[in-house]
Image 1 (cartoon, rainbow, N blue to C red):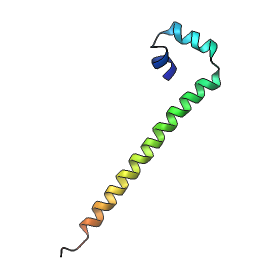
Image 2 (image 1 turned 45 degrees about the horizontal axis):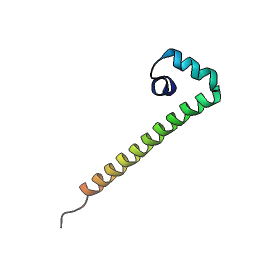
Image 3 (image 1 turned 30 degrees about the vertical axis):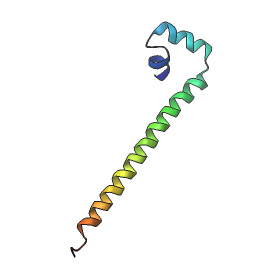
Image 4 (image 1 turned 90 degrees about the horizontal axis):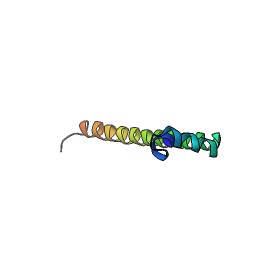
Length: 65
């Protein structure tokens, strides 16, 4: 999808020309990297959300001085 929409600008003729010159491994690697980056961003987002919820929970149970 990255090659089709970003590199070939959604043009089928350009995409088919790219497919002839690039190998399947290259196309697979680009897709894999995009999925890996999205997965890492979701993990970081979950970690930040968890950290904030634990912080808020600890704040609730503290006694006022």
